[in-house]
Image (cartoon, rainbow, N blue to C red; front, side, top):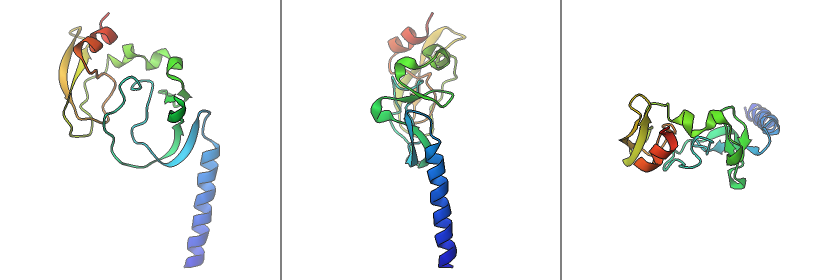
Length: 142
């Protein structure tokens, strides 16, 4: 019935309002936020493409320069902690991501101590991905 629908809409708006009030500092609630947020891991090399999926929830105030940490806080890039650093990114396996683009990229192989080329699909993946061999080496080679 229309009365039931109205009650459901009111209940939904109250739930969304409650969630919005619980967002951490430097973030806001968005019912259709990005599936590819800017993070401590990727702010130097943000995703080239992003799947157009609405992700409801708290999202960092990117327009103010804030990025998301691994533990979900929103900080300025200079405040990213050691757990979010390039050194940890260098340990991840290469990941082409979810999309089907074709972007020449480089990943660091800690077992071989060198960087190698792979094709990045353009979205998703992880941060063991660099645009050039030299960028990869400077971030990961000891």
